[in-house]
Length: 262
Image 1 (tube, rainbow, N blue to C red):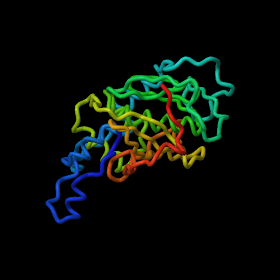
Image 2: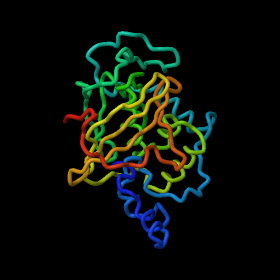
Image 3: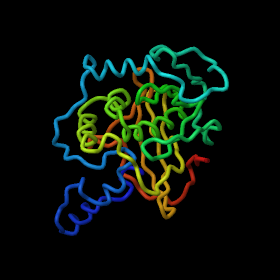
Image 4: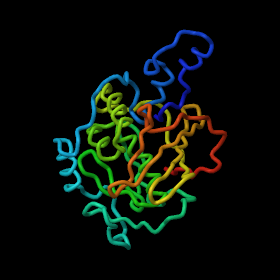
């Protein structure tokens, strides 16, 4: 499912003078927050991710060093790894135009009960422990990261994903505190499915990706994920409320979106 696709009912009730309900108990917020696995949490917890010198970081390093190919590539990328990229991560970053079609080499995989796209050209190319990483530094690579990273936060090893693939700061601490209230593997259930994407803003340093989601009765919604290029790969930028996506809005149609194919 996709984050906050239904407007929280508490907002409407407060506007009408009704009793305020904590946002994590509002049915609409709970039902729609599965994509980022931020279904609950008080925001008052002080749980934070361990720093670079802690055991979690050591595990992450081992995961990166032991990474294996996630997808099979037809040929080696045309360029050597750029400065700052981890050993073994080679991507072809020449396709700088915003894509007008889904990658032809898309393969769908399951993450915590949801289907997520991967691509031999755009990424993620490598898997190490819970991390799916090594995205192309292209608009298509950013789009793939916007799909993969939030969903990997729903699966086992989500703390490692948060530490390595989410920009650090107080917003990330808030995200971790809320996610910690869920089961280790928060299986996503429901009829919502990823339908398409758009990249309205892109530079080699940052990107904004819009996600198009189809609900159980065919209704379309859109939300957005922000990313930055950091430490040789795309990372998701958490918002101040501890989520990875903007407030959703109904979509009138699919115009302007690249649609996914099975």
